[in-house]
Amino acid sequence: MGSKRQSESVAAADVSSLRRFNRYFTRRIGALDDRYLGQDRPLGEARLLFEIDQVGQVGQVGEAGEIGGGGQGGASLRELRARLGLDAGYLSRMVKALEGQGLVRVGVHGGDSRVRVAELTPAGRAEVEEQNRRADALAEGLLRGLSPAQRGELTDALGAARRLLRLAAIRVEAVDGGSADARTCLDAYAADIDERFPEGYDPATLVRPEEVSGDSGVLLVAYEEERPVGCGALRTLGPGVGEIKHVWVHRGARRLGLARRLLGELERAAAERALGVVRLDTHASLTEAQAMYRACGYTAIPRYNDDVYGAHFFEKRLPARRP
Image (tube, rainbow, N blue to C red; front, side, top):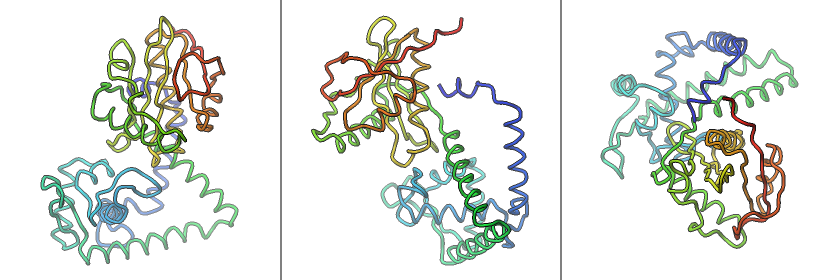
């Protein structure tokens, strides 16, 4: 599914605009300087120190609800590779350099001796504090030339850009319905729903692996920084008719537009299987889901199944596939 989405054409003007912004911003904040923020290290090492500090502080849920964390005051090298998108060898060399400067110490995770964890030393924490002070001063200097209204406009624009770039970086893949990632997501879905439904939720009603595998259907998992953060399932009800089930997004990845993206990917999967109609049901308490389905072109229909949790039933006719 991810490869199909990536193959969709992107306007050259959009590519040029993003690259132009990147060039301006990296120059303006001094990212190209080998002494970032006037400290005796390049941006890569400075960012690594910052991430070790951040992961150590936030544990399992990162900044602004992002997924991740090493916990126990340090950051696993695996976590750092995912957060920074670095090659394992390059990351290892940077960690060793910082270790040699007395800024980082590396050990093993208390619960798993196979996991290596990087932690800031007192000198490393002092450097990050100074780095944050200088970065705040740089940002304040950039904003000082704007009026309060213009600062608000910029803040809103940056928030939108960050949200959309997070969404763009998430990949959606079809996985085996019985795989560990599939069951992790479905179990998390069931736990979330159990909290919201007044009557609770019986996980025995989740789709079975064989219903969402092979010709019978598909189970999609969304990954952010190599972690599953969402899912959705499609199963075949009958000739030309499919059913969408269990669209779920981790609370740390909500408000990005990921649920709509998963829904669109499931509709594409249905079209690829020559399913011209997709149906779904939802609980009375899930008002936000009902609003999303209506906004995405679903119309209300009479009950079509015996789902004890279903109160609202929807259907959408999909456009015929191009030959």
